[in-house]
Length: 298
Image 1 (cartoon, rainbow, N blue to C red):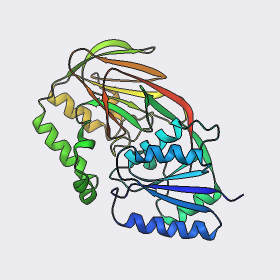
Image 2 (image 1 turned 180 degrees about the horizontal axis):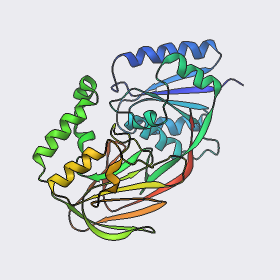
Image 3 (image 1 turned 45 degrees about the horizontal axis):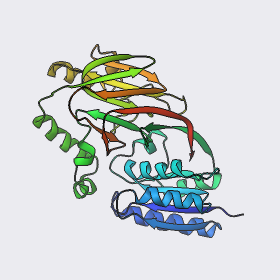
Image 4 (image 1 turned 45 degrees about the vertical axis):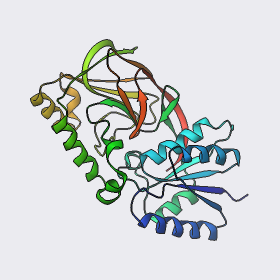
């Protein structure tokens, strides 16, 4: 029986070349005998609803076309679907920063992507869960984590990754590096800390930085916790310079460990959470891993 493939497309993600790539890919798949359909998202959570519907319809492969936010929504839909046989995920990256696709070294070229679908090689990767939500790559809070969803969509479309850097520079000049006080509870580490930032990561590539959680692995059944404690500007500069090599985890103001589950509570103020580059509510939050929870084409 020929496989059914559904393209879930964020039309505002990436540049105009995306549409041409999808059309070329559809022609190749149709010629090969695949049953192909397309769905264009219009608003937040459309991709989640369509992924749930696709699971019910017996779609074999969902191709998420967009950035990390689109991938997150599709994955959430797959995870929320009640079918015993869930669709496999393929990612045709096109957004501003595609951390998860880059981490897995997934093809962007039409012919290579077509070959990947034909070969049908899949792996089961870990997925993160935060309260009732899911994340593919990272959940975070604190310094600069609101940059992703504050960068305007039209600016992101034109400037790409630079939009995040511009927004980040703007944020650093307006923030006075006020720490947030949180309580961290996990089997490996429990304490009350004044922090500038925490990241709960599934892969090592975050925000375009390939070694922010340098030991993270989507196949190890664990999440990586990175906490930057309250720091002087000079210490912070030193930490961020060392992020490029992954050496920042050796700094005394950085806590780094692996865990299956961690609960983080705010001590006083509201602390917003970023989930795969989108606003995800406020702390408190329980972060846990779902080992091998998602089938993905590689």
